[in-house]
Amino acid sequence: MANRFKSDLTWGDVTPETAFLNRRAFMAGATALGAGSIMSPALAASQYSTDEEPNTFEQITSYNNFYEFGTGKTDPAENAHALTTNPWPIEIGGLVEKPGTYEFEDLKKEMTIEERIYRFRCVEAWSMVVPWNGFELADLLDMVGVKPEAKYVYFETLVRPDEMIGQNWNTVPWPYREGLRLDEAMHPLTLVATGIYGKDMPNQNGAPLRLVVPWKYGFKSIKSIVKIELTDKQPETSWNMINAREYGFYSNVNPEVDHPRWSQASERRLGGGLFAKRIPTLMFNGYEEEVASLYEGMDLRKNY
Ligand code: MTE
Image (cartoon, rainbow, N blue to C red; front, side, top):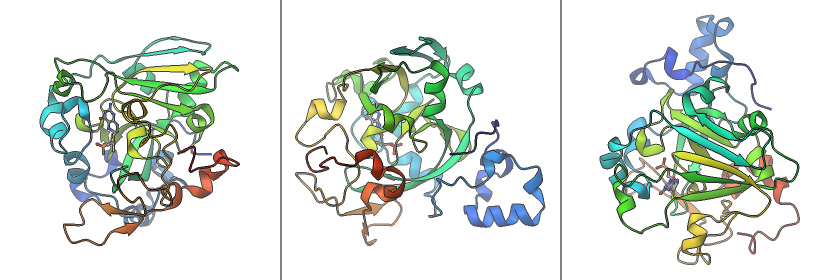
């Protein structure tokens, strides 16, 4: 299991963004300074973090999918400043012991914020490596108490066309919706991200809180969440509603199952430039060891 120590301290608190080094160099430096003893456990390398080089803050925040702000890759960076995120009430309900409306800032104080460096693979075959900060969804679900009948978790994004300019068009049946099976939601890799690079979440990346499920295609990682509901039926999800043939409920990264219109065998890492070599896509986006057992006995071609 991940670190369960309480701390709000993240990488960004101790190292300015401009002095951002790769994790190994940073950890080596911290040890040399004898900082290990005073360092927050949140700064210790998570067993779930990749040691691949993270993409830059600039790359992660300037090439986005967030249809609430337009369908172009730079639309979110241009338009998402209009979103106001304080206050941010989150409705948690359905099959839980403690349903209610929880204010994001209050809720965050109750959670253990960790840094997790994850690979992130979009269904469109671009990818990046992101140093998220956030907490395990399991901790939040434990806090509200999941009833035994619950089998799925459903999520919804804010609807506020005044601030979300893309919601004035029917590109997606708003609100954007997503869902996970309960065991997927409870998996320690499943993160509720509250920021990147130790900072609060930039609006274009899904402020103030978004899901990150690193072994699934990026569209499962729903942004700017305002509603979480525990259910006993598989919930409707946006991309499945838009095109069920192309986007299944599970959407696990799988290089062996092509999208009907393109190959999923390889990917383009952001920042590599126009002529960068594509890299092979890994089964479950490289998290096979951690998550394959969740799908034992399932035909991954049928249950895509
Ligand atoms: N969440 C909402 N609410 N709206 C969206 O359009 N796009 C999804 C996902 N979450 C999306 C969303 C898709 S397709 C991807 S690839 C990721 O967000 C992109 O996350 P990023 O912009 O932080 O890289």
